[in-house]
Length: 209
Image (cartoon, rainbow, N blue to C red; front, side, top):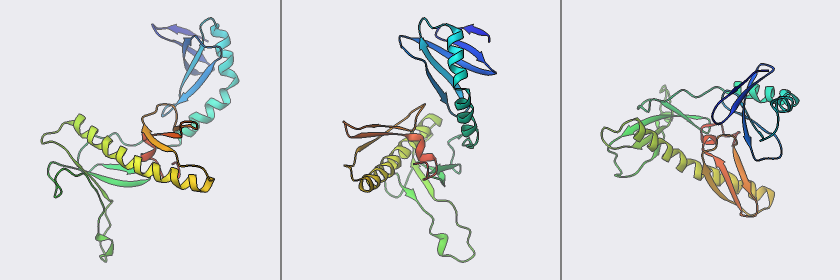
């Protein structure tokens, strides 16, 4: 076991796993494994020794390996350059990005589908995700436009899914909010009647939602 210190955290090598250790005013060890590469992070009490932290990690070594294997089995999406013609998955369905400065319906952003399916011998193209952007928009503006559109789709689809399950479970439908989350897919606040879901779910297959 080796230890290297930084201004905010330390790193432990535990049985070949690099663990980031952050000491806080907490009573217990809290261990998390983050996608996509299985980074392990531990929050530990201020006075807990490195050896005790390492022992706590070893107790959950099987759990860590299982989560890492699960992350490794999920193919990573291609890194986007935010250009027309690239592909984005929306609930498991590939969509072709199209960045447009002008559109027939001024000021509207729409989700278009091809109508070529009824033509014999015609290869059906993926549906298009058409986004309006300012002239000469850079990567940051295009990324912002895509995220806004994905949030719009996510809000609608997530709400529909929550309402469907609310009927099945016989409970009142919650308010669904979309958030960016690093370490979880969602949270449920029962008393407030709210469900927060990770925006990244919109790029995963419907079964994940």
